[in-house]
Image 1: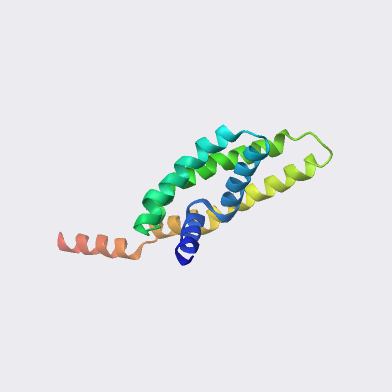
Image 2 (image 1 turned 30 degrees about the vertical axis):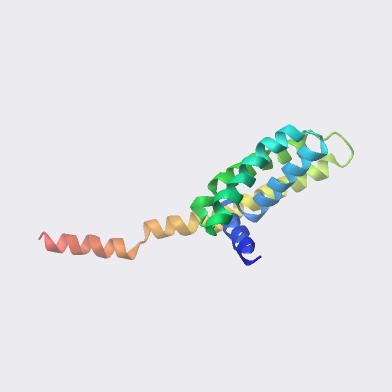
Length: 139
């Protein structure tokens, strides 16, 4: 169970927890609308990749989880599309909730992904020290 927890944590680094939730919701939408073929087209590659590579190697590095994250992102698109196609009294509330989840996912990627990486790239002290050192060697 510890490996699966580590797998989910690493997957949340790639896709974000709201993205994973929307991906699972997409599979639920496909199953409830009886689109079993579409659900299987998405689920079988992800499940077989997990069973044959991730679980066998017991390695859940972020770079190995990209194929699963892509499939979950497509499934999340199905969930968002279904939320905006509903035509009943609570459709407005569902749309607002879906937009909040999307905004949360984007904000989380911005705060924990884009900003720290950009800061590190712009203000990398090791790079600056290497640049200064190279400049001194050639003077």
